[in-house]
Length: 494
Image (cartoon, rainbow, N blue to C red):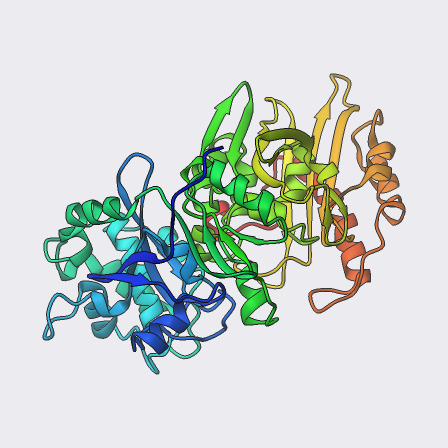
């Protein structure tokens, strides 16, 4: 592989200004830089973990087709190193003049969408991102856009009224991002010089690879480096655990990892594809998995976080591995120029340990689409429905024979063991048996052979064990009854 040209500075655009930085800490967050270095105080720190939305800004990036997309992101866990070649937009950039508010802001003022005001800039930025894409959104689209924004004093109804009314306050002719779009595309293209970014010395380095091949080369020479795609997990290592993550390799800008393809019943998703980017394809081919994606974090987290990252970090409570294991997914791993493919369930070896060699990385995940006639379901158990960490998650794939017996069954759970794990004893008890309540009740007794869950702040071991058993019964009832699912959102119920 050819050695990439190296430059020692980050280049991006902040609101309307070009930014060039040659002194950047690998773990410096966008939020801290905006507030401390640029005195842009509209972006607030609330939770410092991507939950409350007070830090919401928009990040514009070029798409492979040459267009420009703006997405809401959490500045508190977004690292500066991930912004090379991007356009960062804060709330200060919205108003077209000093004496006139942007329609999003004016609607919030007139319809009483703010009280103390601490969370308001974050709501404004989330609504701004939605309004640019969908000027007249439905209530469901509004609520989805605001999943990652919390308000403690106003209540959400005034904010929802403001969201519905934005377009009545004016068109898009004066909107700064829409007016500047073509010029901004040219400016961002000029930043894409095909070079690698390296800032710092020795271990304390920040690296932005020039290409996928360059990334493979970098990781071979620095196999202990922290690889950051969306930073929705690694960001908390810094803001909450104060961990040293250096050196850091940022890969969010690698277009080669952004591919999505459907061929011969297999969905292949590059490791750099975000939840938001994958949602349409997944929902079209595997609706139950699409419904799960909409419950992972808020919109800001889904705009940043990647399915590949959710797999690679090996968390026992990662939301995507259990359903992907149940579906029989596989991974492509790469080290240098050498690739290998393994079953996803074999990737997780033990807590904090995966079948990944030094210098090797997840390049893509391949997901079989269940054939017509098979049943597939995913159930996520949390204390609140949206934007909450998982207590336990069960995924089920079932094929029935013509005589009603179980011809194939795959069951996997997260939050029940040190890794995402299949329920082999439960599967064995079901396979070849009639798919009826007696069979299911017998199989439920086998859960103790598969799992010994722990107690933690999310749930007790007893609760997890009971919930896991009950999820199997729920799956049985939903596959044998014409009644509505036992627990749905009001939109799914409608």
